[in-house]
Image 1: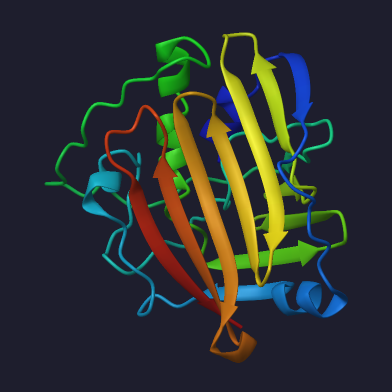
Image 2: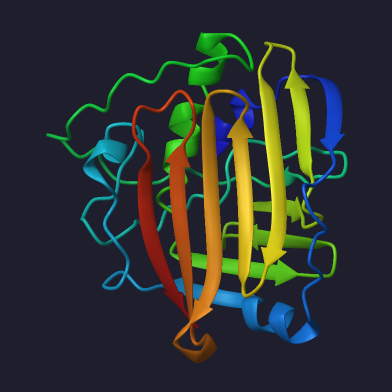
Length: 233
């Protein structure tokens, strides 16, 4: 988390909000209550971190189905500070030793949205979000959703369905959006023209468990990396 905060401390040059494609859905009180609260990761039911992702994560999980107690905040980058919410707090990335023997991923090739080197700097940080924290705290309201870990780090999204953009001084364009779609909550962060990190949250098992589907892709990624993580109360 400290690495993420440090690399995103660049002075912002421009904030842009793009209108949504459709009308954002307003969550019901029952839906917000069902998603909100403290969730514990179910290591047995969660998919292991993909081997290709381990070579991107600075410190990978020590075992296939277990994350360490050193938490990483779900979410990536620094969301827009105007309209799109924002990140707050310190913490740390995924802990544990780097797993040896992982195959190297195809070399990403950034296209547009900023200088190639600048965009590549964010890839490792996005990859750490494939290993969400053991304890996840979710707070919801009519206008936003907050995901936090027990170390006090949090990230906010404005659930208006709009794409919020931030132009960085290094030429990179960061994007963020969030929306409710039926029984699902969709969260999106991206480096425009290069990398996309998508999360789809939905309740399963009659509301007693939370399923999070995570996908790291984008124009610069030769192949998408996915993972499904299960949380319970």
